[in-house]
Amino acid sequence: MAIYKKTWLQNMQDKEGVPKILELKKSFPCFNALAKMGAKENDTVVLVNPRDVEQIMKKIPYGSLITLKEICQALARRFNADYCCTLTAGIFTMTAANACQEQKGQGIDNHNPYWRTLKIGGFLNPKYPGRQENHKSLLEKEGFKVIPKGKDYRVEDFEKYLADVSELQ
Image 1 (cartoon, rainbow, N blue to C red):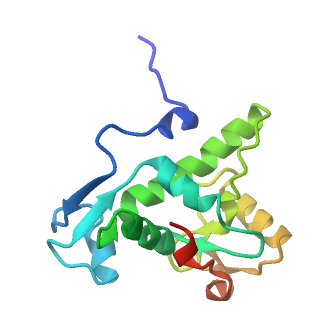
Image 2: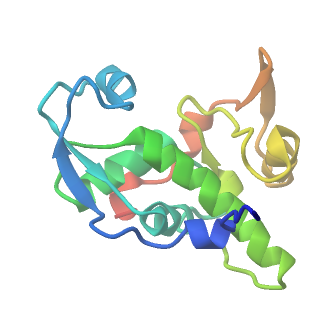
């Protein structure tokens, strides 16, 4: 029996019933991450589609950066929720980056500068195409200084380059 694996582009498709706003529970996989941001049980949290995340990623101009935290803040505002699920949004940044590379391999440019999207804390994403080494190279080509932090990499002073979140909804 053949196993069918979805392509990255197929994973970018909207899911039925999403976006969905839920009351945050301690049992949610994203609870601890959201609690670090100040969330409390019963706050509203939005689950979004991959295209919602990609739409914000595509808006980051040359010379600017964004982290998952700012993406989630923009999405929460857009959907009138207190927070956005960082777990699904984080997965969707990786999905959008890989879908972009998949399209590039087909000769299509979807204009997603995914490398300008960092993990929380300014860290590079090891799940982007080409892993951290490629992410580092793309950022350095744009003039960002990438420094080692343990086994990971981080953009030095990334906060100075954050895009204006209010314009990203």
